Length: 355
Image (cartoon, rainbow, N blue to C red; front, side, top):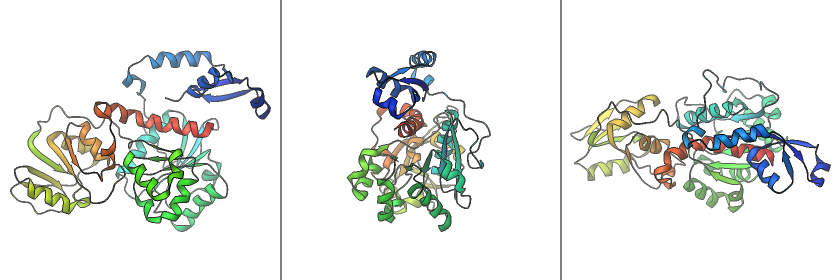
């Protein structure tokens, strides 16, 4: 987790460019202190942080999320002392995968002390954009042209630093624009190693050194196995049939001994049952009921959160290489890595702003 500490600058050349004191992330402050460049003044904070490090992995990652805060409803930054983040995102599907992930990661960011205001289509505030310490650009395909231009003006003309947080592969369809977007950013965050490699292939090697991969933000305390549900043997849930009709049809034809439960427009028969479309909060129940999760998209998807949602609930994913999240190699630590990902996200934001 991010811990900010006050430091005294010891390096003579640095002192000439800045005042005697500076606030830094504790990890960075310790590195600079070991080189004799700064002295940490917040000794008690440093001591408290050392004690926290001794806690178990899960204890380090426990946060109390805000109850009724909603960054999409905020209209101004509320705390001058906090780092101000303008969070740009489309918002067509409130319960879409990117929207759910954003809500979770922003809640954690607010808890860690960032002041985050959402910027969504038809609700673009130039004051928010141009007074932000950082703009985080998620998907932004649905913005009307004027609002879209306001965002572009802020990052290119007003030089507000920005990060591109890429949730899918749509940017690849506007290659020339996106190449500049990813090249000039402070940082690019992709959802999987596969997503990053495909992006480098299209935009060029120049984006690699300021890019990192983090799995999509998932509340692992919500997606867990339901112990009160008996898992059906030899059963397969297909949660996104529309993304992979032909490949799933072929798999079903080759595995008639299995029983398939499909969310989507498919013809039922002896080994196929249709499930109604479910709300996100119902998915842990479904992933706890069925043995396997089938997802075979024809096109590349950056992450696909259902891959990890199924794993968290003890449902075995059957996927192809177009599921970006399948390119992670977390092994048995996947739950901890998912829990840690939002904290790594905000740590990377802190490092970008500190230089």
